[in-house]
Length: 350
Image (cartoon, rainbow, N blue to C red):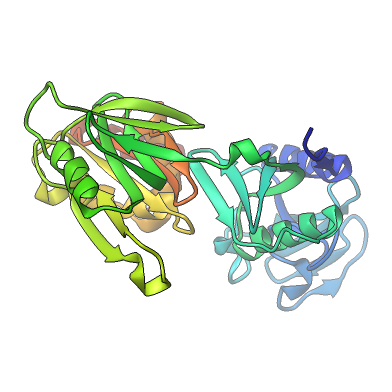
């Protein structure tokens, strides 16, 4: 039996109260910069021109007033105009905070947030549960993520993913893989083999033009039967002799995971490696794929709205090398409707 989860229910309830205020249209500022009461919000004391005020406000500044909320341990900011203090636009002010669980592995903590799998490289051995939870949330606050972790779950040894990629005659092992079930395509993989011949056999199947040639991906988190892309994958390989080991490591990337302007297909893939932002990368690729002007700050909204419009489909991932991936339809008229709807609702603005 594995180690019991560590939970901070007080933190979960406090985040829920803060999220309820945000959903009601309130703008929040953090009541504490560090420690137990910190939130991924601008720290109210960093506001220029801050002075104590009279009831019903606790503080005021040139942009508005602050009133402390005891449930959320945060300040409700009431603006006096349309402008916010400098730097506040970098924080998730309008996205309701979420309390999420995290999975603890040796030397890393993994968090699933919407379509993103976020991996934090942390020393998890020998830490108290309380200290480790604080380290995780401090990292999230510094990265200005719209969520915090309230629960730590320790991974069982059997959960450490072993990914096998094979055809009828060869098999290699991968530390990370992404695939598209609808297209039956391998999208990305980081793999290793003791034999270059095995790697060549797998690469040949990936580029095969025959509908009778299949590849299988198997992992503890799932698997699939895949077909060849009928063309070569982008790849980079390196000998493991540099680290005193035998074999070759290879990174594989589907042709449709590159620049969508260079491909005639009606869809493309976006793959975020561990540590990369899927919304940012998605926004960059969408700007290349459709003729309509977009802005980088629209990326998170368009990613979510694209899923609602069935233009964006999250893809399954295995291992820890890829945080998230999506399949994106190139329908420019459908994307025009999504962008127009966002502008009309005020979710995005020029």
